Length: 425
Image (cartoon, rainbow, N blue to C red; front, side, top):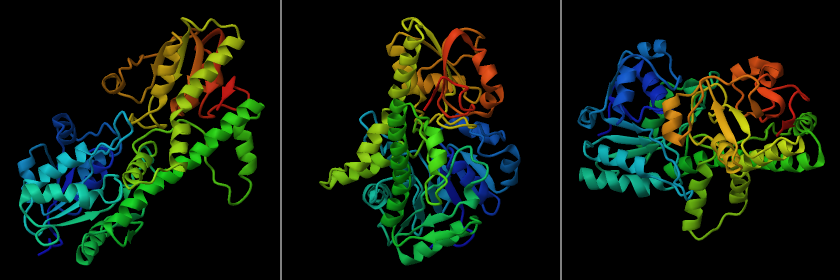
């Protein structure tokens, strides 16, 4: 028997994806938010969210939502939604450890009739081939007889206050036709933009992984064009504006490709393809270009400094911004760290300043000691790496004031007007 309409729901993982989901469902039904991070649970119980994806007011509105780090309490739920990270390891291979551990936790509390829905980005087949066997083994129950599964890929865009959970159309799927209908109706109860019921779990998984693979390849093309145009002495942004006058030209821009999805998801697809004996070429070519942009930016900065006869060995460079995108505190897979690492290879002293980032998190994740305030007239080079509104408000004069008498300003995100910076990507 499938869960009733008022069944208790549990969200496993309360990060950028899980918390907004738990909050929205918690406005309408009983929801248990679970996370293994005790500090995160304490923070949420106190009514604050350091990711800034939900406000204290929104947390207060979710009157049916409670939080716990005790896995035994999950037994009270009948529907489980898993929103844990799916990163890659140092060798660019999918790391399913958080997903498997979450499945193990649920397998210990799973009951007859329960449904487990996964939202984490995976390669096609991961839900049924990797996660379901774990649920079966630890619960002693049989898939699609005693318990069921669904997949509804997350589409959260961190820091975006216009495109939010309820205003982004949701893809849904289930392991049987009846479960697919139930999962679709479940999400349909909170998603204002509507839902799309995929033909199968594998189709839904594949749809998610190609969304970001397509975007990754488009950015890789623009990054390669930027490298070419830089050699030609042509401003890339000017070219893109001109080309953008055609109605079907796609408005992608060059830059560092990080974050929880675009720089990670293609490796899930290529891993599965290689396991099946096919070696992707186009997808991995795009990945190589985007993964190399940090080193390219650093080398462009060094060349510009040398042309100005600025002593590189022992120079000081300020990097403005560490997050993977503007106006949010999200550090996941930020590629700004590649720029920092490459500059340090030239024995350059690098200061990193980002008013959005928690200093302890930056130190823990990347070993970077953030500075609390840049020193005026102190830097041989300044790289505007992230387009935070605070940096835009400084303007070119304010940012230039941080440099020494002879310095190089690199505007990576085209924040400043044309001609205001010495370099633009």
